[in-house]
Amino acid sequence: MSLQFMTMRRAISSPIVISILALVFLLISALALNLGGGGDANTIRETELYSVTQGDFEIRVPTSGELEAQEQISIRNQVEDAVVVSLVDEGTIVETGDVLFKLNDEKLLETIRNAEINVTSAKNDLQNSETNLSIAEKKRDSEIATKQLAVNLAELALHSWKEGDVIAKRQELELAVQTAQKDFDRLEKKFESSQTLYEQKFLSKDELDQDEIALLRADAALKKAKLSQNVYEQYTYEKERQQKESDLSQAQGELERATERLESEINQSIENVSAKRNHLNKREEQLANKQDQLEKCIVTAPAPGMVVYASSLGDRREEDERLRVGRSLWRNQLVMIIPDTDKMIARVKVNEALSGLVKEGQRATIVCDAYPDASFEGVVHSVGVLATGGGWRDPNRRDYTVEIEIIDKQGIVLKPSMRCAAEIYVESVEGVTYVPIHAIRRKGKLTWVWVQANGGFEQRPIVINRFSETFAEITDGLSVGDRVLLRDPSPASIVSTETKEGDS
Image (cartoon, rainbow, N blue to C red):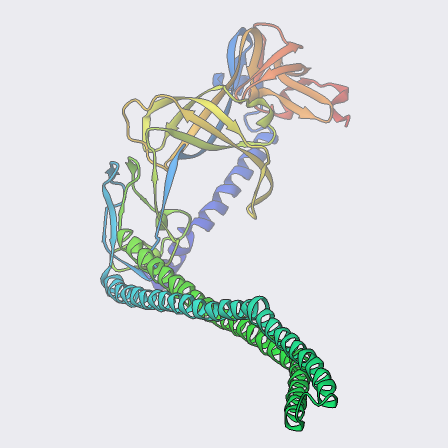
């Protein structure tokens, strides 16, 4: 076989070339039919004709999608810089408490040991600061008590001086003045009497001189007493008063200064204790966080279900992205999900044109690609509020998401992401005239079918009421027993047409 022939063979067998050849074949077949090849009524196959009957049919909306769990639990990594060391197989059915995966904890254990040392050191620092605070409080109490005693003594000294010393001194000086005055008055009278007696020659000159000297001494004593009284009132009293009040003021000032200084020292000690306590709390929180992360190195199932890796969700299937032993995980990374396979739903898409027929609570049947021989009963659980686009492949398509709850799984294990097809039962139409949907033609405002008559086919306008994906109810234009063509007839077989066909 030549190289050129092999190249041509490979080109012909490519999917694109095969699709093009199939399209060309269909175009040639359609052209042959329109040109009258087999267009005579006598060449119509029996399977291409349908006899109009009256009976029942169901309006169903066909759709497709995937299975999902109605409820699922997300399992996320809560450990920083985690590495998977063991892992449960994907698809495993687990019970509550079963181990899902384990993470490397060597680095965490070393961090916890260091954190415990830091906590112990912080406790010692706090204890020392509390001891220093206690010592400072006792020192404050003792020093303030001493300063307060000095103030009390100064107050007592001032009060004692005012109420005792001053009064006693004034009484003493007053008594001295009075005594000197009495003695002076007595001696003055005696001297006057002695002068009279001396003049009468009853006393000698010497006796008179002695009485005069005594009077002079009494006068000096009186002046001295009065002078002492004046000096005390004008100078000594003020000096002692100011000294006593100054002693009290200084004692009070010392008390205030000591109080402020010691309170400042106490406040510093309290702030130091608070800082040490906060430091200890921070260290304990760090230790508790690391211990909590150590516990989270072993992740168990919070509820029963089937294990599904997060790497299996979506479109990415690269080996580097798949969950496996030895893979590093970041904090809060989704690792796996555990869907509740006992409660499954079919998430399907319904075209916008049919979405108005679908309501919550309608009956449905679901068939999975994995179990084509099993049909599951379901009920419409919810209908999406907003439509989604068809993407770049079909930008004009608009679909609504419909969730169908599977009522009975028939003992079959259904898994998320299984492809499925579903039929939603909208309504049962009973006792009506109907034809297959493929027989109906439309153009502009005209709706018709091709009815076999007079050796050919005539164009028969009809009125349609309810319809499904396979049948349509005909309320006018057809009778039971009429035979309609399921395709367009050849031009040679058309016996009559409606003039309204071209209306728009």
